[in-house]
Structures are given as structure tokens and as C-alpha cells.
Amino acid sequence: MSLGRVLLGEREIQDRVRKLGEEISRDYAGCELLLVGVLKGAFIFLADLARCLTIPVRLDFITAASYGESMRSSEKVVILKDLGIDLKDRHVLLVEDIIDTGLTIDMLLGNLAGRNPASLKTCALLDKPDRRMVDVKADYVGFVVPDEYVVGYGLDYQDNYRCLKDIYVLGS
Ligand code: 5GP
Image (cartoon, rainbow, N blue to C red; front, side, top):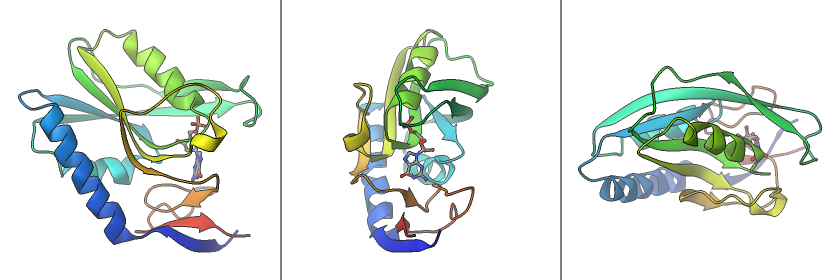
């Protein structure tokens, strides 16, 4: 598979991440925030977002994987690598690369909510609402994107293209 057109350029992405950082810093003023990145796709977004925050921040990462047929809501999402930090009484922001069917974030939210955080919200760089199977909405969204497969800025195709600075639609 080759790269198609640029959907979001580096400058546009960086401007939006800075704005998200300002908004999140305002909303959590006076608090310490735990950013939970969903690996691997969110690692670049999380690194940039964390450096745009002006509040005290801790970081941790979680890895989820889905099994079954990805086009069906019977697909099962499981945690492959869990957090090292106890969430109890912490303000937690779950950071995702993209929300597509919504199954991954829905499962992770349910799981993390059971660990008694002081608060739990979500931030997704990209939101692809056309393919949603469960009714989830991120609290902070970078960009709403059309139903196309995208790569770059952390997002992969078979583990390629993650380190591109722009976000591309995957070609054929
Ligand atoms: P969901 O559970 O919401 O369907 O999907 C979440 C995961 O699917 C994302 O974290 C991402 O890893 C993958 N995904 C969904 N859409 C895309 C896409 O357009 N490009 C890439 N690279 N990954 C995607």
C-alpha cells in the first residue's frame, strides 16, 4: 500500500495540538493530570500534547488489541499491557489516536472507571464518526475525519508510516 493525499499537514496538526493543550490546561487548572496513552498509535500525539500542557502531568501507557471480525460489534477488545500507576483519586485523561467503531475506547473507559479515578475523560486526535458501533464521544477531539484509512503522526499500516509528520490517506 502506498501513501495517498495529505489529509492534515504538520502545521495544522501542531496548531490544533497546541489549542487542545491550552484548553486542557485551563480545564484542569490547579490539578495534577495523569495522561494515559493508548499504544502504539497515540505515542506521538501524547508526546506533543504533554509538552503543550502547563499543569503538572504524569504519564502512563496501556495497550489494547481487538480480536474477531473488525466490522462487527461482537469484536472483543482486550488489554495486552496494563498500567503501572494506580488510578485511585487521580484525574485521568485517556489519550487515543483515533476513534473509529468506538469499541476500544468504550472498553478502556469501562475498565479504567472501575479503578476509582477522581475523574476520567478522553482526548482523541481524530474522530471518524461514520463507522461508530457504540455511542461514545471524546471530551476533546483534534479533528473529525471522513471514513478513510489514515496513516502518519503515530498511526500505522502494518506498523509502517508512524513517524511521518503529516497525516495521509492510505492509497492503493
Ligand atoms: P476502534 O476500536 O474505535 O474501532 O478503533 C480504534 C483503533 O483502530 C485505533 O486506536 C487505531 O489503532 C485503529 N484505527 C481505526 N481507524 C484507523 C485508521 O484510519 N488508521 C489507522 N492507522 N488506524 C486506525
